[in-house]
Length: 328
Picture: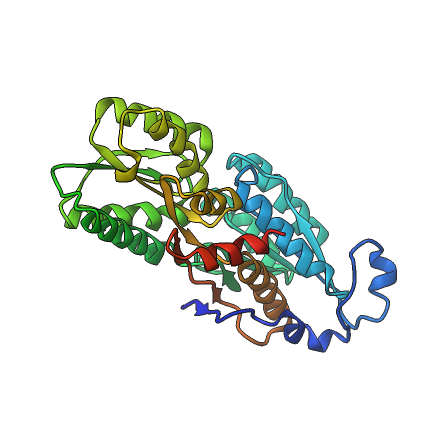
């Protein structure tokens, strides 16, 4: 099973052509706006890291796309801090409601297996987000393994360009509590170590608070720390203050993250030590979530879609501005 990479927008309107509706619904009066629909498709989207800045923005983008289509109703969960009980309760409710499709990143796939079986037995499509899982009807998201390799390669190139050699500087990475994102840190670490750079800090963190604390601790123990790569942008943004308050020459510091959050993009634009992110174009990713769900329900079209992440750095100010505009 392979993701199909999207190239630009994936044309949600085309995916919905057979529902008998044109776009324009605002989601405010579903009974009125759905009157002309041959089929109203109800989609639930669950992400367990609802406290992550990028996830908040992503949910908003998915809402905007769903609101453009009179024949789609969107449900969002409120799970935060990767709380399995909260996520399970939400998805269990959606299964009871017999929604048409559920798109989710599971906190623990095995712990939700009974819900997947119950959902699919009644005809609800089960779509994985951020990773491809066995037994699903579709998938949306991205390739974390490729993102990890690209992050590692960019860091090595930056270090070599700035003549910061192995043995002279060290690296810190953060990891995710969710299996779906493991490739971001595993493969970045592999690429850096193959180039001879030592990873001295490798701890779980995907928010600004722990990013600050981990970077502070790592700098105390390793004054030669010069690279910090967050498994999410939030962890990297948190590390900015730790380096700025240290005695380290900021010109020798590379902070990176993953996702392309608004705060990270603004940090890149400002020209500080946060220099790059593996950005996921918000609009394309949001659209692919709905397209995979709708196509799975209709039984036609691509159901496994991936939005490629791209390295966006201080050298790409035009692209930084384009991605920032998506948050508007």
